[in-house]
Image (cartoon, rainbow, N blue to C red; front, side, top):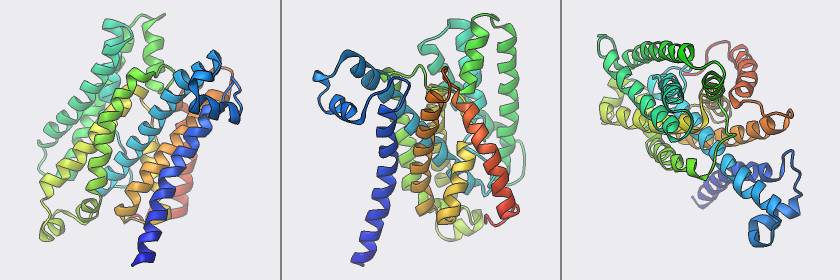
Length: 334
């Protein structure tokens, strides 16, 4: 028993320190070179740091790195939760229209108000509204709840995608349209400490999924089997979907639309630990945070101008998913 407890402790410590290691790496890697000793000095003794080093690390790199870590964790764990609850390996964190709803909210805010707080407020609001509409539209169908929610998400995603296209059509071609396009490609370039308030709902959503992770194992067996085992299917499905929606909506409102993480990262973790969500959920949180921090480092350094995050995640995610399908031959998930 003691050995088992020590093994679990090492497991969770390794998952905790992996993203922390990459977060620390991101603080001294960039076009403005800061050595490792200088980085440690700035972090431990900020008062003695040069103005340039202090500004780069504390004002620029640290807030965006924290944001990228939490966004990556949120998208990955939400994708894993949705895949388990819906029993579908092809769903992701935006399956219920969150991404397209947030995209329309941001585009509407840019057209009406320009940049600033309205972009984040409206993107979050419309992301949550999209999930509510997905649920309501899904109730029209008389099939199983999982199918109705997915169908509702497809309908609402298409609807908000069309509304976003309208906003792009009416936007000013020289100022508003580039801002909308850049936001939809995803980026952490404008993240500051004021945006980190979104970490609170992201953390709350992640914690809900983490606490309910063993329930996902039961729900993935089917509604009848879960009810037979004494699980209140409606309550726990609502809790898990609500937690995933909260974390995803909060992530998208500060980063823009970043694809593939909620689809690819859970599959990578599943290849390592299997389908047990007791292990899959913590690993998805760690790998999701680590992956997006690493992608953000690449985005800041690959060219002289910053590459949008969404482009890099698609470039990495698409060939990997093709490889994954070839390796598993489209099966072997459940």
